[in-house]
Length: 268
Image 1 (spheres, rainbow, N blue to C red):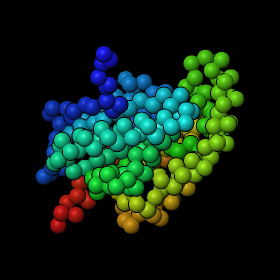
Image 2: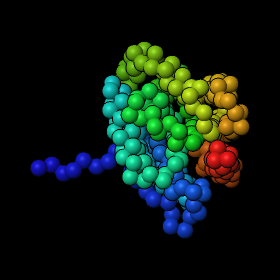
Image 3: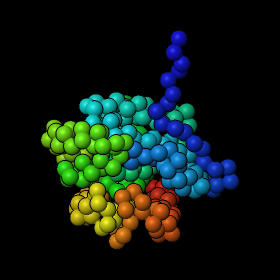
């Protein structure tokens, strides 16, 4: 007999001495979705940012092959949704869910789950619990950017050569999905707090593309105070926190406080 299948999302509780972020409810949940090819020890640095602020976390490390094989994102994304639903049903006083996605590796999974939350009848009850999204270094939508991302995560030259053949085909076949991906990220249904980090020095994600994303999100929000963003001048792809730790943490603190203020406002 085979062993029991492990949950797709790794669960870590908030630090024992951390504050309770939001009054009148249990510890909120943050779903941290790592960039393509990220290592657990690197993603944990971001997970720990949430845990020290009093949040329980689910986390996931994305692999390059998952983005190339049709159906994998959908299947794994559905597994994530089911795990989140199970957690929320078992923790009925958890009233706040936050998504934190990095690059396309995390962004594709985030977009899939948000679409399910908005469209699937058995998931729509989660939508009012989603209080915020942090997007770091996404989306990468240009063909050369997508190829560069895969090349940086490939283990050897042979795989890099194969990617040079496969990725252009991937871009052609999935171009319509890339358009859908952007529409989900900027949807009018996403009426919650947004925090976006990006950089002019990012060689994978073009800051001009994120500027447009920010503009669309701003136009679609009923309350423009639900949007905060920071464009750095010099930090590399998914390394904004390492390059600018104080600014990054200050922005996270403001994000957490903004959600708290919105929760209090909605209770009145």
